[in-house]
Amino acid sequence: MPKLIEEREIRLEWTDIDALVEKKRQSSMKRSSGVHLSGVIRYVLTSAGLLTPDDVTDEMPLRMAVGMAWEAFAVGLWPEMIWQPGECARDGVIGSPDGVTGDVLEEFKATWKSRLEKCEEKGVRPPPKNILEQRSWMLQIGGYLHMLSLNQARLHVLWVNGDYRQSGPQYFMYLIEFEKRELERMWANLILPNVNKAIPEQH
Image (cartoon, rainbow, N blue to C red; front, side):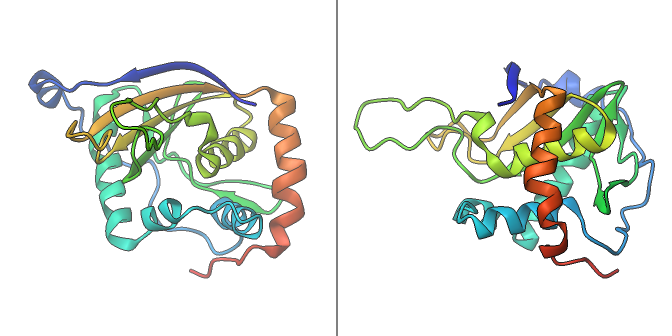
């Protein structure tokens, strides 16, 4: 199980907007043909019945466009980050990390899921979702870490609807750490056995 090192809400000020650093992608956005990590993860979760309706909805084209716009904006808040460093590959699987800062992987997500758990009991404020239980995100992060021989990642999440309690959008940053043996086990047990079952991308 990965470890959550830090969870922090990033509250933007106008000074943050003024201080935005103009970023350029280090690589083009063109994806190579072949089996991508996202395709393997989609197959794993779908075949296990674990792909939730929220996961599918977040992949709709317009919502993906919002996620891309969020990423393009938010990278400017982190001056040292290398944005879109380029594709990586391991064992025939291709990955496209969002960014890297030193020895830390950077990933950005925009989601319409609630930041809080569901709760039917009136008057009780539900707890925040356990970010480590967001399976698709953890598999993607773990896969990229293994491919890049890293063990820490910062996940930047724009909760578009916040807590669904009139909070408005919320930006949370999560620093997550995996053990090397954990990454090796995930790759060997979940990714490698399913590489040939995922649908290759054609570009």
